[in-house]
Image 1: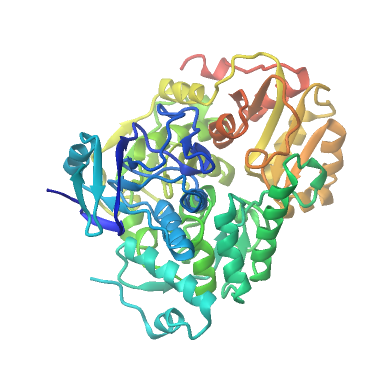
Image 2: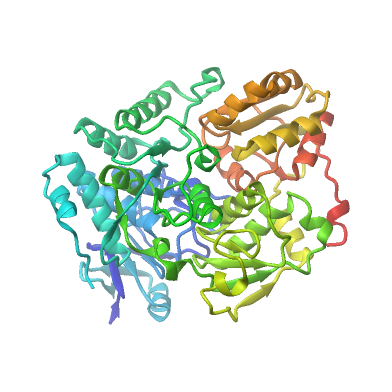
Length: 136
Length: 422
């Protein structure tokens, strides 16, 4: 059974798994209008994150990522869920405010390295409110 | 241990001070829970990044708070916005975005924030001191507050900044705590030639290199000349906060919590020790250039906002020369520094030389630059990092000396001498 070590934002989601090869800054690296990666230096530039369970080890870059992520969640262009290895308050804040303002929840889970690799090997998954991750 | 709230916190959460304070406290509490804080602490000030427009969500949040009558409870400065209110003619975006951006700025002013509109609040007279707890957002300001001022802020994002300013409280966690401020990874630059370490351009490059390696860890730099200037430390921090998540660093002999290596590391000197070579720095420098075009269309300096000493250097380098007529030259700065330029007569000299000042905002976050044909050159690793994606520009990174010489000649020229041995 795959389980988060901590649930930063609790909620349910499902979607395709997308493991990012490098951390992404949601501000400057991601466009909230389209939900795609626009960081020219990112190996997955052009890739859409919309509706996917997006995995990255850590967050990166600008404080404005919170605003961009909240706007993407409001506009329906956000990942279905995020899976991280280290907590990132900049990312979490975007999800907190989207929940407070629009009652739209984008779960954020913290997992250990082994669990991270196991999840990354899946094609699609389902996230439960208690932090459990199941193949789908 | 779960989060324990004191009676004041609980009262705010319960809505005794109105719905805006309750919403702000919910944001603080939920952030504190995600950080596993056991309690909240008082802050003495805040710096707000949320005033930069990124879409409807940020405006909805600010207008909800302001509309419900929220007021900040501590002195609060505002980061760059999307508009240059002193040079409004530069704005080339659409009217809707401009109006939304202005509405966002109005909401933050209505909550009692000071209209400072700068990403370098640490260049103003009133700034937090060693050991003071603050809630700062804007990645370069966060790392400067922690590393250079020795003030204490976690790496906060938008929304927590204003929520903390309204409630006067922040999570007692992360970089507010001694334990999280100690270095766990060391970078030794003593093998880098002294003539390179004598140049300002080395420092954003060091920051860019380190930022890619540290993740969210706190690094300590050893082997650098003692007493590095605030502008050089700004260069390290802002670059590392763009290429990575740098929110705190030490430089032995330069930053206030690093009189020596042992102190910077809390008595436990890290075994994780990296030698930085000149070749590493050359590679890092080259990563900041994506343009191969020789003709120059623009230079952009001042990301983060240029300081008075940085302007002094620019004035000195320009002498009585003028920018090439085909080149647009921009320098971003804050209002307090712009005022100082006026007093010194430098604003006129810069205008005469063909340099356009940009205040309240920055050239890489809002459409103020003219149509650029050719390379855009910068002395900022942060600008070089973001401008290709944000603006679609071909960018070359160089020293301020390179930028000025290039801008006068109308083509990219770089003094490779100091990098040649690398």
